[in-house]
Length: 586
Ligand code: GLC
Figure 1 (cartoon, rainbow, N blue to C red):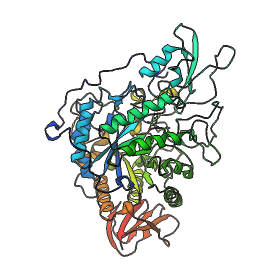
Figure 2 (cartoon, helix red, strand yellow):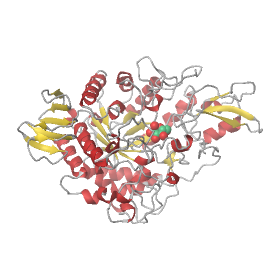
Figure 3 (cartoon, rainbow, N blue to C red):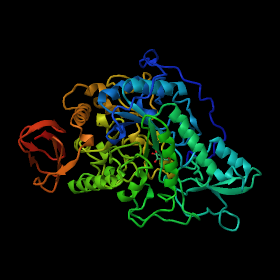
Figure 4 (spheres, rainbow, N blue to C red):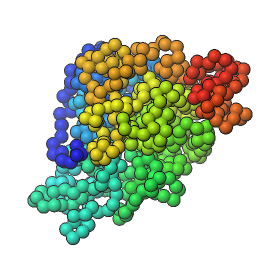
C-alpha cells in the first residue's frame, strides 16, 4: 500500500519556528549572517569545481530527532573545507510533507521546520563563505507537493479554472472518465495519473504525476507558472546562493496531446530513450530550452557567477549538450559516466564522448559516480547484474556485490574521475568509502519506489543512511541521541570519519590527497592525452604533469619507472594490481 494515497490537505506554514541547537558545536558566535558571497577570484569557478552533495536528512543532526538539519550541516562544514571541495549542493530543505524526502515541496521559499529556519540557512551560507565554500540549492520545478497551496487551490477551483491550469489536469477516458488520460507510468512504479474527487463529491478529473501521486506535475505552458519560478529564483539569489541544481530538468514540457508512450524494454534510467530518434513525450522536449534561457538571463543579472546544473537523464550525451549551450545551463550531470561501469573500453569511450560533446558547446564536462538516487559506487561497481537508477538493492537482490571488491573498484574509479578535466560531483559518504546499506529492515524503508512497487524495487534508501562521523559515539556521531531515520548498519564503525582521518591509505585520505593534487596540478583545466601500450583492460592517460594508469582487468600491469603521487592501493613493486589506479609524475 502506497504511503501517498491520501492527498495532503494541510501544510506546515510556520517556517520561522526553529528547533533548538543540540550538542554539536555551536557556530553562532563565529558566523556573521551578513557575510558577503565569495568574491569571484578564480573566474568561472564552476568550470573546474569539485562540488559536494549534502543530503540534509542524513548529514548531521543537531537536535537529535534522527533527521539531519541545517545547524548540523553548519557545525560540520569545516570537514568539507578540510576535504578540499569548492562548493556544496544541498538537496531540498524547503517546506515539504517529506513524501519523497523533500523533493515534494509545499513552500519553495520556506525552510521545513525539520531542518530549521531561514536564519539557519543564512548562518550556514555565511559559515560556508568563511570557509571558502560556495552553496548551491536544489530547485524542484517539474512538480510541487500535493500539499502546496497552489495545488490545493486547483483542487478547490474545479475543472477549467485558472488554478487548475497551473497543473496538468485532464478529463479521463472511457464512458464516465474512469480511465486515465494516457498510458504513462510513474518513474516510481504504477500509473502516472491519479483521479481526484471534485468538491461536490463526484469522481473528477485526473492529474499527472511522473513521480509519486503526492507530486503533481505543473503545466509549464502556463505563463503564471513561469512567473512564479522566476520569483523563486530571485528569492534564493537574493539570499546569496551560488546557484541551483535543477531537479528533473528534462521533464518540464510534455509533448502536445500527451500521446501514449511505452518505454522500450531496454530503456535507460528514468525510462529514458537510448537512441537518437527516441524521445519520450515527457522527457527532453524542445520547449524546455526556452525556459532555461529565461532563467539564465535572471542569473546573469546577479554578480558572483551564479550557476545552474541540470539533472537531466537524457541519452545519448550528444542530446545533453543542448542543455549547456552558452545561454542555458552552466553544467549538466554526466549520468552516462555514472552508468559506464568498470571496463576500460566503456570508461575510455565515455570520457572521449563527454569531452567532445561538452566541448562542442563550450561547456565543461562534469563527472559523477554517486548520488542520492543510485546504488553507491562502492557497491554498484561490484554488482554482477544491471541496476538502473532508482531500482536499488536489498537482501533478496541477485548478484550482490563483494564489499572488498566494490571498495577497491570505487577507490580506483574515483582516482580516475578526480584526474579528469572539468567539474566533479561527489556524494556525501563516498569519501568514507561507504557501501550501500543492503540489509535495511523492510519496515524501515521510506522510498516511495518501495511502496509503489509493493517491495519489488528496493529503491534508494540504501544510499541515504545517515553518515558515520565518530566510530564510538551514538549513531556514529550523526547526533548525540542515537536516533536515525534510517538505521545505520552495526558494522559501520571503521567507515567513521574519525577512524579514517590521518590514517595512511584510508579512503578519506585518498580523496584528500587526490583533491589537493587536482588543485596543485590544475587537472580541472587540463587536457587528456591517451597513452597506449598497457593492454585493453587499462585506462591510461596524461593530464599535464600527471600520468594516470587504471587497471580494470584481472592481471597485474607493469608500471613505468616514475614517482608515485598517489595510489588507490598500496603498491609493493612496479606492478599495478587489478582494480587499482595510480597517479605518477613522469
Ligand atoms: C530527482 C531527484 C529524486 C526525486 C525525483 C522527483 O530525480 O533526484 O530524488 O525523487 O527527482 O523529484
